Amino acid sequence: MNKEKIKNFTKVVLEPFAFGLLALLFIIPAITVINLEPITKAIKDINVLGVTNKSELQINAIGGSHIIFRTEKVQFLDNIYSYTTTLLGRDSGRYSKPILEIVNNKEDEISLEIYGSTNIPTGSDFTIIIEDQVYRLQGSQGNTTTHKISFVPKKKYVVYLAIENFTSIQFDESFELSIKEIE
Image (cartoon, rainbow, N blue to C red; front, top):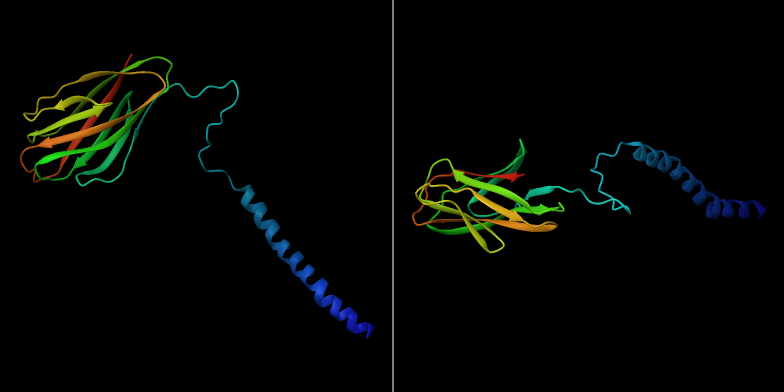
């Protein structure tokens, strides 16, 4: 009877405990290896007392899908931001989409020179809209205009691109918007 109690005690208490130890034997080295891998994620900015945020201009593409806007890209080269997109063939009408987010993290007001056009004039009128202000970039005859726009500090702006054409456009076209900070 004493042997049966020992066997029963072994089955009830010692076997689960042994299986737990055996599992830990494999889990602990796996966790150790995972923790030894290099961190490849971008390190987030930590808000530390006495440290301010980066004081710079940020221009980011908003993205999203639209029936005529494809392959939107923002590049920064030689102190000029360049937004490019492919505009698909379209029926006559007015189209608009939020394309950029401009954030002035600087302490002072900044001025940006904004210029945009297509390679070939198609009779379309291209404008950007910033805070309910409309700026014509390219007229229906292909004439282009450069705008100098001021942005107050510590504020975020959404830039909309609006296209209006009175005839159908049967082919794709490329549109480029250049943004340069005036110092």
